[in-house]
Length: 323
Image (cartoon, rainbow, N blue to C red; front, side):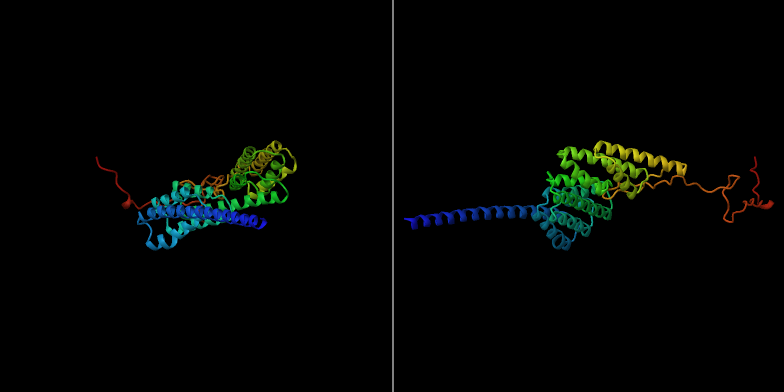
C-alpha cells in the first residue's frame, strides 16, 4: 500500500514537472517569435531605404538590433531610432556605436530609456553624429555613477525604493554638474528620513538649479563642489543647505565682481551629456577691448604715433565733375 502511494506521488511529481517545463518552453517560444517578428519589422524599415549598404544592414545593424531586442530594450524606442536615422541620413557605423552604448548599458542593468530619448532628441535638433555619440556616452557614464551612489547606500544597510527611477533622477543631476558626493549625501539622508521618490526628485532638481546657476556665474567644477560641501557641512537641514549654497554663491559672485571690477564671465561650455541646439552662437568675450593710447587711437604695430597718409600727386588727383 505504501509502495503504491509513493509510486503515485512520483507520477504526480513527474506530471507536474512536465507541465511546468511545457509551459516554460511555450513562453520562451512565444518570446522568441515576438523578437523575430520585431526584428523582421526593423529589417523591412532598413530595406525601405537605400541609405545603407547590404553589408551595413545585414552584417552590422541587424545583429546589433537582435542583441538589443533580446536584452529587453524597448522595441518602440529602437524603432524610432532606426526611422529617425534613415530620415536624417545618419551614418551606419555611427548608428552601430549608438546601439553598442545602449546595449552595454542594458547589460549593466541600467535604464536605457534616457539614452534612447537623448538620441532622438539629437536627431530632432539636427546635432552632428559625433556629438550625439559623445552625449549618450556621457549620459551612460552618469547612469553608472548614479548606480554606484545607490550601491554605496545599500552597502551601508539603507533600503532604496524605486531603484531605476532613482538612477534616472541622480543621472539628471550629475548631468547638471551637481557634485557626486553631494548626491550621495542626498540619497543617504533622504532615505534615512523616509522621504518619497517625489520629494527626493524635487530636492535633486533644486540642487541642479543651484549648480547650473553657479556654472552660469563662471564657477569651476571644483568651486561648485567646494560650495556644496561647505553648505552640507554647516547644516543637516535640507532647506538650510540650499539656502547656504545660494548665499555662498552670491558671496562668490560679489567677491569676483569686486576683484575684477566687472561682471563675472558666464561659462560657455556645454554641460556633460547635454545636447546643443540645432544652431550655435559664438560666445562674446566679456571685458575684452582693444588697447588704446592716451589719445584714444589704437597704436600701430610699432607702437608709435600713426603717420599721416601721403598726399597724392596733383596729376593723379581726380578733377571735380563738370556741370
